[in-house]
Image: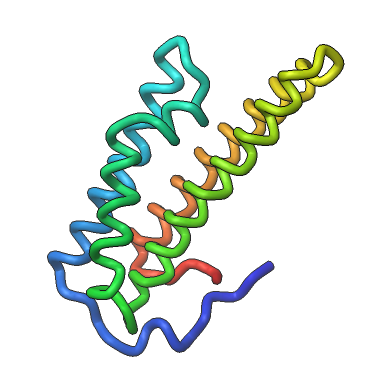
Length: 135
């Protein structure tokens, strides 16, 4: 298992940046909730829902402000979650285009949705404990 990088915890972040990171996790979580309650899959609402898009934009805009703090690892965690989910959605779409791959596409999409939930819960839990995420 990856160990948190000790160099990212050298500066204590401001309370406002910690709150912002909670809001970003909340936005991602809201997108997942919309995917679970709506007709779309979790991964499609995670990638195309306005809450997650706003969250990723905030990640990129405020990333410089969290450099040197443990929040930097959370921002990287959230950004990687978004882009890896997009990658798995593209793979699932390519599989769906083939008749044989439809069932594999569905399994991949559902698996990626579960993975997104795991990443949000694990990250948000670590943030509540003021712990960095593994790189």
